Image (cartoon, rainbow, N blue to C red):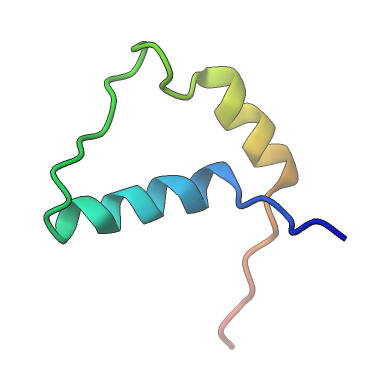
Length: 55
């Protein structure tokens, strides 16, 4: 059984962590080739898990 792919926000968070630790990478500007578009964020929102309350 293949492993489940990580989502858009997990990939963004992972890249931000790498950048913070000095990887030399940079985030793409909105609209740049290869950058996630509006449709990608809308699709990710449909599959997002609901937040758990910390009560």
